[in-house]
Amino acid sequence: MKTIYKDNIWRQIIHFVKEERWDGEYTRETDLVKDLQLKGDDAYEFICLFSKKFNVDIVDFNFEEYFYRSEERRVGK
Image 1 (spheres, helix red, strand yellow):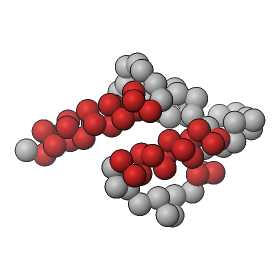
Image 2 (tube, rainbow, N blue to C red; image 1 turned 90 degrees about the vertical axis):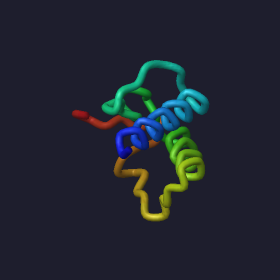
Image 3 (cartoon, rainbow, N blue to C red; image 1 turned 180 degrees about the vertical axis):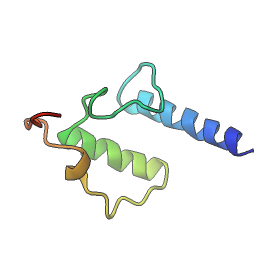
Image 4 (tube, rainbow, N blue to C red; image 1 turned 180 degrees about the horizontal axis):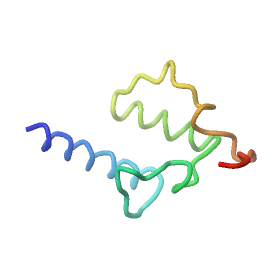
């Protein structure tokens, strides 16, 4: 039963990503920053929409730890 539930959640997440941002192929290892180039205000908006859609509390989520502003570049990453 748990596998069916996880697969259903995965399909819902993929549908959400395609609906909101990108059409493409995804794996569980797809990286929002590296693979989808998500950063800055776009990252903030995407995470906020994701939190509302999937009822995820992001009050303590530190955006700067995972995303950076569109004009910034991380050296060596």
